[in-house]
Length: 226
Image (tube, rainbow, N blue to C red):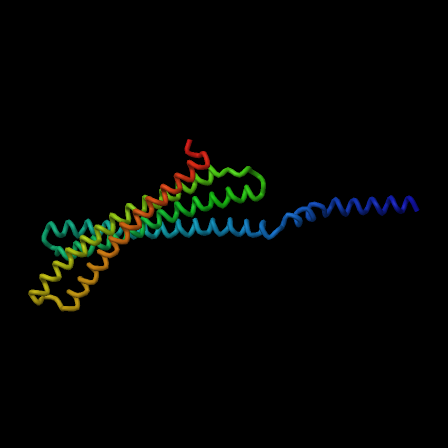
């Protein structure tokens, strides 16, 4: 009886030793662990998506810059009209706008990935909570937002100026009856739109400054500004 009991216990220990790692692993699979892994994958996908978008905007910007420079040279030879040059300038600035935003999205996606990883280590208990480290990352995000807001505001002012000049050209052509009323009206609508966008972007620039100031105050409050 004792020999059988020992044999049974020995077999049980072998079974436990064999499956204990799996049992231990299963114990760590919680809703929070699953969601942390999903958040990590999503953050990485957002970063890759932003990088892909940036490559497209970089290519579009390079082409728009080439075309605009070409039309400037043609204008010097009187083989391109002022309207065509402004038209290519608008294309260039729009490409520049898209590229600025794409660059910003890459920066933000990378910082969000770092923030997510930092907070995961806190929840896992693998590192102590460090609010100063988190606040510094938030400051970096707001700095990027301010940089892009400054560039975007300048771009929209340039667009507004270009659209105003194009409208004046169309007005003159309309007086000569060289273009249709529809074309003249379209130029006016585009001028008004560009003016409104310039105003909005200037307002967003001020908001971006406020957000950065708030982030810097948070950093000071947690002792990270020393």
